[in-house]
Amino acid sequence: QKEVEQDPGPLSVPEGAIVSLNCTYSNSAFQYFMWYRQYSRKGPELLMYTYSSGNKEDGRFTAQVDKSSKYISLFIRDSQPSDSATYLCAMKNTGFQKLVFGTGTRLLVSP
Amino acid sequence: DTAVSQTPKYLVTQMGNDKSIKCEQNLGHDTMYWYKQDSKKFLKIMFSYNNKELIINETVPNRFSPKSPDKAHLNLHINSLELGDSAVYFCASSPTRNTEAFFGQGTRLTVV
Image (tube, rainbow over all chains, first blue to last red; front, side):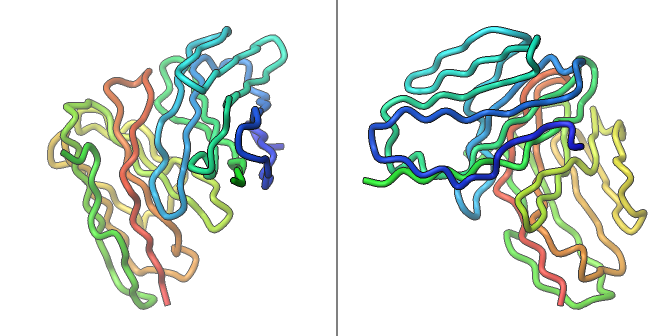
């Protein structure tokens, strides 16, 4: 079993939809949680970074962490075709430099 | 004003050759990494350096040798390239050990 599980998709939605992307994990020591967006043939770009449990909002993006359920989510409101990309969750322990990634979910937003 | 830059962007080479990938960050970060992304897009850490010191070596074959001449640079040298080394290699950096990582654009290595 992988440490971080993520549905690979693809997830297809119409423009304007609310998108929910999720990851589950098994290591209860993870404290730092990140979401990256990766366009085809580009490097991962950091979208959201949260520490421990709770919510964080940035524009159309909201990240949620539920440590009791070992479950994290990224919500995208008013999705745009330019949001079409692969979304990777990543997490790490305190004091450890290693980021553990999910396999990524491919999102397709159609006009 | 590129933050984390890698060269080359593409690398096609024959089996058995030796090649290097260079990485530089101008963010003033203390920590640098090499990650490998396979054909299924799975990103996995290979090495981590903190202030030029090797911190993580994640069961990578010793044909792969990282070198950090200073904390702004982390290069990756690969000896005796194999077909299975074909992947995208990403360099990344972070301000400290406990913060988010910023990635370069990747080097797409193809071994033929």
